[in-house]
Length: 422
Image (cartoon, rainbow, N blue to C red; front, side, top):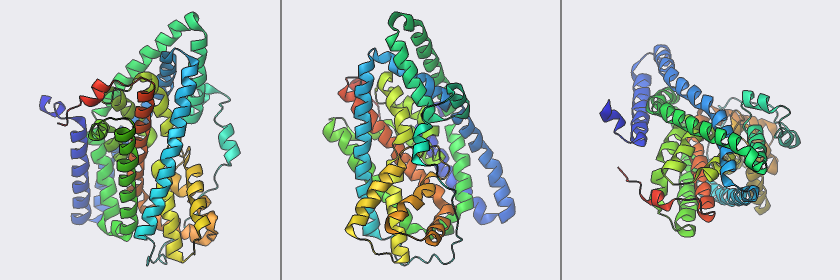
């Protein structure tokens, strides 16, 4: 198997993705629908095992890496500097995501002429009030937060614990070294899990391609083009511009270094599930020191949702165009603002983007019936759109981490510039 492991991981993942699409479409076109779906369900088990392994490692990785990263800073004040820079950059990139999303929705008009009459209305459950969501960040029992996988609460507790170890000075050194050792061990486990990525991606994509099919995809072709083109433009112009123009680093080198997390993000549709791969790529391929990667990337996986914000803007215009709502200039501003606000912290919410769509559509008084119809129309193939949104989110996390590392002197540029393309 030496030849297999000699191939770059991103190439193996890409091969799994292509073969998965081909296999899924072949099964859907040549086999009896019931038998074909049963076969695809069996193949998907491989993908489900991979997802479970990734989710198994996410919480301990976030907790131990974040504590170790803060401890490695050596000064609590540095954490504040890094946190402020990262948060402001996330806001700036989200602002541009909103502009691009509204621009693509206006230019391509994905909702024009779309017949939603055959869509089955689908109601989503009520969302937790913003006050309760903010209060939930502070865990009543940090151990329970770890068990339940409450990432925001885990991040909050890990930051406090890391600061506490720094303030303890000499007495905190043994515990700090313990967290650093565990963090290194978990990263090694992540390497082992990632060797299964090509097979997991194959199983997940085969099931998606086989059950969704080309015909279903064609029903939202223009909307899909708008989302994919918008995300691609955002990554190239905003993230690429940040890396090349403001940081003076190679444009191609950045995206070459994050191919692994981009592929995994596309197949899993989860920024949190991709986090172990993102941290590995950031430290090994981009040369970002653990003090920054371990603090900025978990934060980004939770609050940086540029792809979601861009998508919500496009779907809002899709809804207006499909039902004939007239939008005034102030509506565009309110849509952009609402998309940015509601996209923060949606990583742990099932069907996150559609779950939040009703809030955005309230900006121009869309009726509850129309909201339900739009959600029902998009829901069956939201996975196809979510895959690209997640790639955008993960790319944004690493772009911001790269910028913060560069400004803080925590970026090894020799590593960044030395990654071969092959």
